[in-house]
Image (tube, one colour):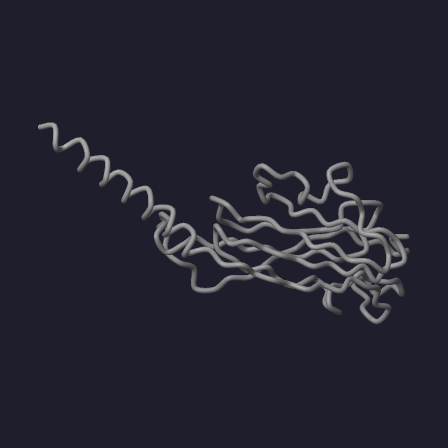
Length: 177
């Protein structure tokens, strides 16, 4: 009976190691470079006003990742004012410095860049990002985030036939500035 103690301990250690290995092996690092600038050619409300774009796109690019992935977003601020992004609904575990809320982050000054790094940990679903200071959200620069489940975690419903992102924003007849 006393020999089962070391065997049980070895089995427990093996299980813990396997769980850690599977978690590390199934996560990815996703690197994105975003150039945030004004575009005067897009008219979402048929009004001649600037729209804030990311890499020339409005809405901004989709972040499509899987739970446990690490997201690295290098934001280049090509605007003439400070910029800060928040990742709405994404849990910032043990690190509020990536949340993008004024007071936990310093704004990205014009002509500079900042790299956000955060993990999509233990959550699946659809979320979105947007500029979080001044009135910049009303000028654009928002977009979707999809967090997919890992294959080892099943969901209680069938996979949809197709996916699309619906983003709703406030637009005015005058510039956000």
